[in-house]
Length: 250
Image (cartoon, one colour):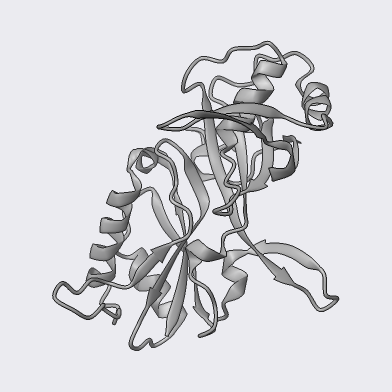
């Protein structure tokens, strides 16, 4: 049986890399007593697949992990058992059963939504809402992408599905010490996150700052992934984006 787990990663845990998160879940699954399936062969390992590894320093409310199990009592029991083994900064948000024909989490990713906030309050960019609209209205947004072997020009515009100013959602780290919700405006961005496109929000932010002739200090912004999406064909035969968890059922 295929299971899809949605979890959040925030606070100090944002500095933990993907491999350590993977090892953490391997141990948490054993501690929770989940009857996970192991691969066959000389060195058996738990069968699991993460959707889109999160960069170090980024928070998320929409991370996904697929596992295979031999048996299960209920998805609610599994969610409770996992959360009892979690540490502060990682919360299991939902557990869903996947159809046998579904693709794994990594192969299913089509897009991801993010917010970008300035850690010290408002962005130091005058009339940012209008400038962001003008920037997004450009016919092309060409940046130079560096790889290990070469550099290449890349047009970001086709892979930016939405770009606007917005209010922050209910991210645990957005709650201040007095328990109040911070309301500092953030940049909301929905981008291509598929294996063929995979646009990083930091690339869009850098291009926007260059457009505004503004240079932000390193690490002055907090990037938070809100959701990870896949593409489906709805009842009307139209293609649309839905959260990865909607591929499963309870």
